[in-house]
Length: 253
Image 1 (tube, helix red, strand yellow):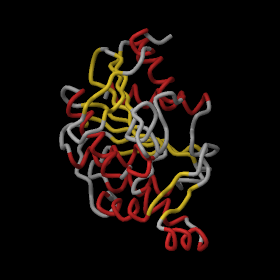
Image 2: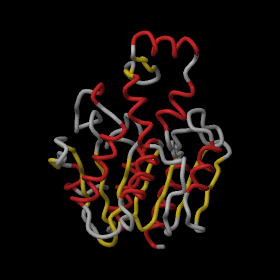
Image 3: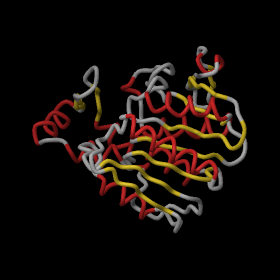
């Protein structure tokens, strides 16, 4: 059962960039476990629930937040950019954590974690990834557009992406800005452990993409675990158990 402090209304961080970032912090011992969520995910997800429940039981320090235009942080999605989400991550890590953290990124959060490692050397002690969508905007989203979708983007300047509770507007400006925040085009200096969980039935982020990210880190202590029948969400009970085990192993490493 979660502690009352975690179930309460969120706290807010007023970032230097002007965003009012909603977060929840379960206070505990040891390094902070920093959760970086996926595209249009929020703090109500099953993965956060699984980790926070174990954190409350075992006395771990656990921190999660919502990016701009996500969850309780709010904001107009059309104003969102990869760099703005990156700035949210840096603001949270700088202002709300002390010392090195154990960071875990899910899907788009894997890209954000890679940026955190690159831009705050020494801040991340150990890194865990779940179906990491490195360079997601251009190498995954843009690359997957059909000719008809590309014509929509070229003629209107906006592609309305389906698959969520509402069509998501992705502008040419969004894709152009993302080009300046890619991580797979050069080695990422890191000497801590890297662990990746990836489903082989992932239809959004192919497991080979996770292998490519693994190869990008300079650390020799890097491993990927492939789940043969796992999809992108990896939210089944057995998947969540593997996630919690990975987090615990990285915390105790």
